[in-house]
Length: 305
Image 1 (tube, helix red, strand yellow):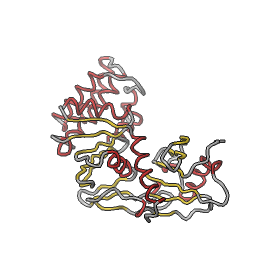
Image 2: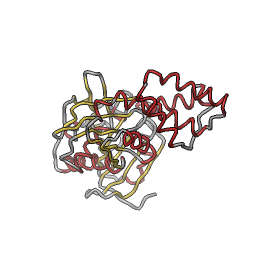
Image 3: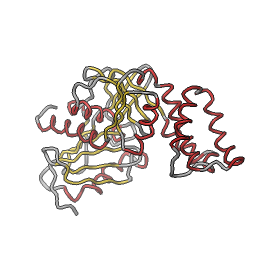
Image 4: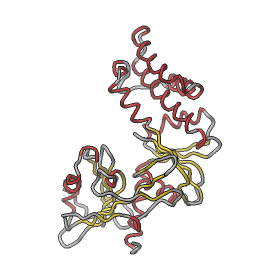
């Protein structure tokens, strides 16, 4: 049981995990907590119990503790569906948030909206809060954000607004191919070969139409030449990220790019973009997500609803 009494709770609720920060009103993190109770494994009536299991010990009678949420918790399959804002737009904040009707009187849960794009059709949930965090840290940022993950986002930011964005299912394809396809017999769960990754990125960027054939070559080389499993893993990642970079070229070419992500997931994108001589830098996703959530709480505490 925690010894901390938070002023509010910050929540990033994704498809596979729930991240919670117990917060002071000035933005100091008192404690970090996490569970595997992601949206993907919950029914609609399972969200509130999952949250209470993680934070119930800090709730006090007679007060509804503000809980500011971002991510897939606001999807159609989430706790409550939060509407989308339409690009071009500034990252939506607490004024557009959905107040959840919760059975627990000791919480007041707000879900921040996602963002939608009509053509080409696209949506995001959670990344808009990271974008808000970037703009809070650097209000003058004008360029491209790369937000890698299961579904990687590329977003064009200008004059404090999200102008357009595009989603690539690269992370999900990597997981499916590496864990559920014939390549599962060839690809290691861990390990890396930087030279193999770089070569695969270059191959996929120059001839993306050959990627499907290159993928099967990983299996064939394992059988015929004893291709090392960590090398196959790096090449699989390189082929998929290279194909993504080829398609996303209109976003990153000639533009400053900032990658928002944890080291393990950001590093391959950083290496691939540097190989293309892109102007690129990285920032940790937790820090930026928290900045976005802190901004939403500050607006709430100031009565901006």
